[in-house]
Image (tube, rainbow over all chains, first blue to last red; front, top):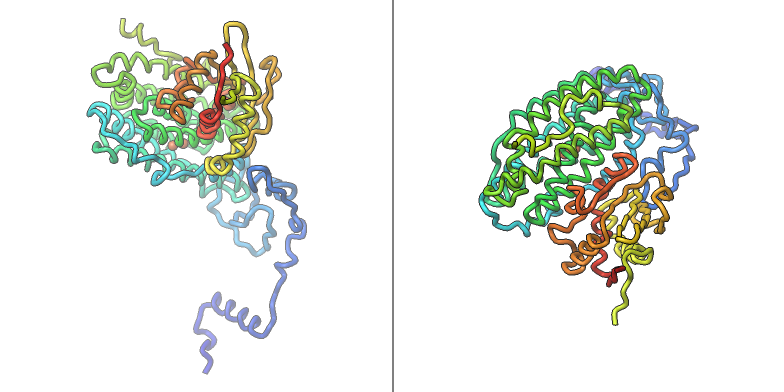
Length: 367
Length: 150
Ligand SMILES: [Fe+2]
Ligand SMILES: [Fe+2]
């Protein structure tokens, strides 16, 4: 008796069995071998830094459609899609302008080569016992940064699976960002736990901004708020972290994170530029979300758990916290200046709309 | 007697570029660079400008510039007085790498004593984006006996 009596299996399994019967008889299909003639014979030359996306995504494969293909499947851009391929309804971000940035592919390549890990790339053996106030300041700074890093991974993850597969450069870049952010939250948390201290206090002020990023109505406004505004401010905090680092350990951590963060900001700036060039009438939506962000960051910047540990580190200890606060007062103006300059590249004149002061003259406030 | 190379000079940056070639596997671990750095050195008498173009894991070119207008349009500038450059280089040479207060980021972050600028913010951001590699590039000064213009 046949092991496969008719009707024992579902129609899908029956089709598969039929196909295997044909193969067992030596009847192969092989139509795929002649498929996609336009995409066959592609020539590729690796560049000085290896084989990058831009080296392979040329000619036929470099054509990124303005409207992502409507077949809505997971088929990669440039392959032949058989007509019977099922359209899937989950890819809802199908316009190139919704997600594109001209540097996305380059940043992805850079991200994968510039990977590092918190297990072996940080010289943990150079940790040394620090005075209690300094250790607490470092641990509080790391607690706050761990909190921030969660959202930076969650935001791209929220949108990634909706993006049409024709925009693989963007999907790859966002995937690399999710992993960058995983490393960041991991390394800051690790530092807080590694030297006899621990995690200290979460930041309610921070939560407001982080929620606004996740609740943004569409990807571009979420990206403007996170990639340009939030990560731009965080990039400066990382630079400050390196500046204030009491040992080689924090120095290495902040330098590594700083590089990653600058990629995220670079994507955000170029995406907003691409978007606004095609939808200048939507600048107002971006302004509106930045209004929210600016208010939230102002509260956050001045929250004690954010500002005081940095002042302790800058002053060299709790006894000199006032000196440290004064010494670090310049950082806010620097953050705002760089933020405005990044938006300028994206084509958004934010200065007349800015809802927060451009600088906070510390001495005037103290007077 | 050890032969010294003058800072600032085109030869000094070329010496670092040669060391970068020798150290290629370490730069590969750090990741590729794609940026142009202009080093500005101010003395009482003059301003010296050197353009270093990085591509992949190498220095593609080193040029002395007459003015900033001659630089590749996409670049960032690191500027300081000669005495600050000297202090940084001597610190790197004394410790086989900078101590905590002589890293590029440490010296530039408050815009004093060094400053990073550029035609637009993304160019300045390249200094942050490639910071590990740029730091390594300057760390090679540990192997270049250096004389300083007075
Ligand atoms: Fe991050
Ligand atoms: Fe980030």
